[in-house]
Amino acid sequence: MSPFTPKQVMPRDDRLFAIIGADMTQSIAEYEVSLLRPFPEDSIIHDAACGLGPVTNSILQTLPPKSIAIHATDLAPPMVGIYNMLSKSKDWPAEARVMDCQKLEFTASTFTHTFLSFGLPIIADPNAAAKEMYRTLQPGGTAVTAFWMSLPQGDSAVETRRVVWGPDARVKVEPHPRHNDPTFNHDLLVEAGFNSGDIKLYESTTSLPVEDLDEFACAIWSIIGEPVGGWKQEDEDRWDEAIEAYKKVLMQKKGFHVDGEGRIVLEGVAQIAIAKKEA
Ligand SMILES: C[S@@+](CC[C@H](N)C(=O)[O-])C[C@H]1O[C@@H](n2cnc3c(N)ncnc32)[C@H](O)[C@@H]1O
Image (cartoon, rainbow, N blue to C red; front, side):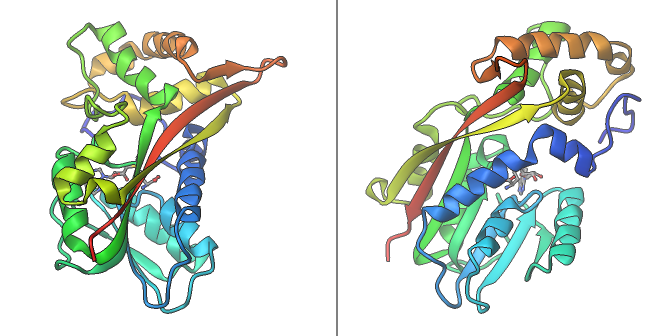
């Protein structure tokens, strides 16, 4: 976070993560794991850009053999802190470390499985991250990546910054220009070294009910509204204007649904790639 933080920014706690839909990536992680064979004895698994640990959680829900090892890594120390708190409370056999997935500290051919779920398009150099997945995977190992083809709440935040602050305005973490391109995942994996024929693509849709649209807008803006260069006084002064603009943009997006009883549901579509490294 930048030295100045608008007073309206919500604290990054369980409540905030629940509002913004941490469960959405959990449901995709469960789908990813369901596409794989059961984890064999002595699997060595990397949960890269682990965030709050939905991949680890999904792996452990399959009740894998006790001999597996899970290595979790994330660039953001607060994420690593939250992962480790969860890990302790849920008794996960895993501990997260701060590490950049563009430059992993693991030696080549370490892992039987490596996951990078919802990271590639927001990582500064997604090619470097994909190459590191390939390098650290054992021959015959499996890599799993996923990212959103469409996520109304995310795209709306990027657009709101431009609507309110002008066409050149940017949020701090803008996704890669090809983040909605269904060939991007595949191309990254091929450039990293995987054979095109060893990559399978899947799609999965998941939804998030929104109970309070004002609170939701405020939560999303708190997490991804921050501009390049950090929050400024102006962001605090124009907070309400940004929230109103965000709601308007969101309501126009594909994936924004209101049912007959006025309940709002947001629908996200993820693409999942499963790649095998040549044996
Ligand atoms: C959208 S979250 C996804 C988290 C989790 N994998 C999931 O499925 O919910 C993206 C994560 O990538 C992490 N991240 C961003 N850049 C990274 C990098 N260069 N190396 C490692 N992690 C990174 C962020 O800190 C964040 O936790």
